Image 1: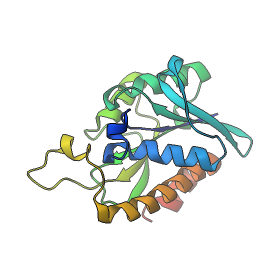
Image 2 (image 1 turned 180 degrees about the vertical axis):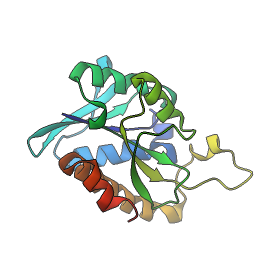
Image 3 (image 1 turned 90 degrees about the vertical axis):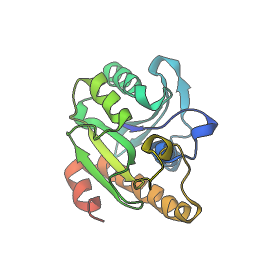
Image 4 (image 1 turned 120 degrees about the vertical axis):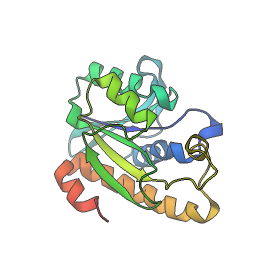
Length: 189
């Protein structure tokens, strides 16, 4: 069994923000793999759907806590389903990457991302897989915490639609072929 988690914040106010790109990718992937819409599950502090890829069960998840407490949902699902750390993929926004870039990573710190910090703290480990989605850095005087809560600029929207498609394909490849093949295919594209 594998767990694919999209990080974001709950509520319409945040739906189209840069911080919620993980949610949008998980929703897209879930619908395209006939898992349907994610359904709220209070037991896991998340919305969840499931599908099979190559005969293996895949859970798609959006933590319904705010970003800073995302780990609560990830830990609850990991514990209940007895999922190994290497079978968890967390999709999140990445300011260190330009818009359009995406890349897999495993291990490592939180790089200042509060959602990733929460997941590391809740799991007691950083040995899960991440799919980092570029959102670029804010231009001064805009603060990082304000920037991530803004929608993409109008000219970035078509690019992000393409990124959503590519990231969904990348996550599918990870689930079907494993991290090494997914990294070889997608990192640096």
